Length: 355
Image (cartoon, rainbow, N blue to C red; front, top):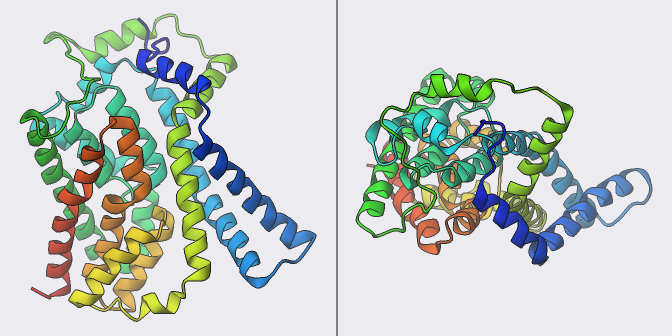
């Protein structure tokens, strides 16, 4: 079967079932999101609302615009991944449960130039295409703020030395967490990936790719089909991203930002305050980068800066809810913060010089 012809059977059945069952949460956040976005436009050019409402609409408008390119790229990647046979995904990432597989998944996360929400879409699709639980987690943990564009921005904000150290430490946490997740999966502590694929020992990706690409013709119809499938498969992620953006907008407007800034020093209180805030505040990787730099430069707290970048990956409710829906396991979803947050806090304490 050609790589551009493959359809994930589970995905198709999911689409079929989702067409029969109305998702009221998605419809609700979509309606609110559109209302807030249009509300900002109307508030700017037509009518003036109260200060709080104006700020609320403006916050959502800015946040959505910041996330939109990452969501769009994520939809494209997901659509393309849906066309790739599982054997190819497993072959590229390495066999599930292997150390080389975890290393490849971590490197893929470090190198892929997408924001956190785009990475989440791709990560969930990798799981559906046969990546192990450990590979999926390593990919997600290593990815969100390590894109090329954000790395360059971070270098300009906190310097090359700290940026390289942060990247290295995030990779270490990703690999350690991946090993733990794979170990728990093998021992039956966590459910196994039902999408796991066994590939033949003699499977050669280059030879098979040449064979599959023969006769493939580019067409706008195929592009439209890829985008359509990507949008369908990303619906669940988009739902929680919109939910997070709406909640973040409300918090940003009605909770005094000054209260946060008082408690972000390089101390135990500052570190745990950072953890609490980054858990509550849904900030995409683009938004997290300058905030993390501010913690480094103004509060002189490199550990808090690292924690702000990394803990958001582990405690992000969009990610936890998406993991639950994709893996159909609350246990897997909650093990993400349970395994990663202690590592992040330990490194944060060391970087702050607290221990």
